[in-house]
Image 1 (cartoon, rainbow, N blue to C red):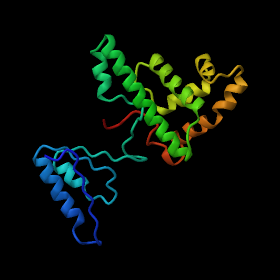
Image 2: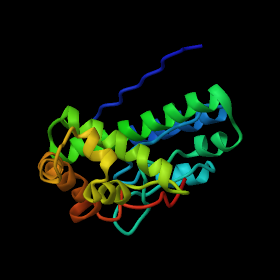
Image 3: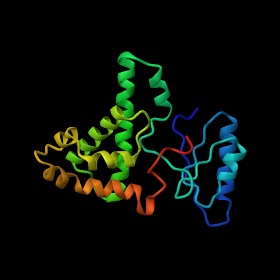
Image 4: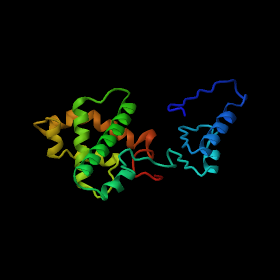
Length: 194
């Protein structure tokens, strides 16, 4: 009956906030709703989700990995499509991949990606889609940008290899941070639990 339900629960520690929310979740699921619990840090909800037959994804080093370039179920749908519908879906997949990659890069960098970097990232994702017979991953994007093929140099409006390297230097470091350091094992490979 409510098209946009929202709940905010606030209270002192130990007053039953989590218990209340768990009861609300169980009731909503019983009536056919899908509950999404994002970021269960204690964990309060992991056992409940498992008990209700839901999927628990534990993201982190040594745990589950998420590939921001994974097309998910849209990839399977694309294999069965052709014509204008397939082209529209390809653009949707491309847009989602690029949006997630840009968001992660901005989080790592703590500032915006420049316009030319966004153009280079988009062209790199396109190139990988043409080259690979699997879902691309962030290390693939990093590798193709470091490789610097003509299509990417053209996208960067770089006349020389040196100009290309200068224009993509910060982007390469940003992508490298997604694959190494504190985020190693989180966004640097295939999705382990779809």
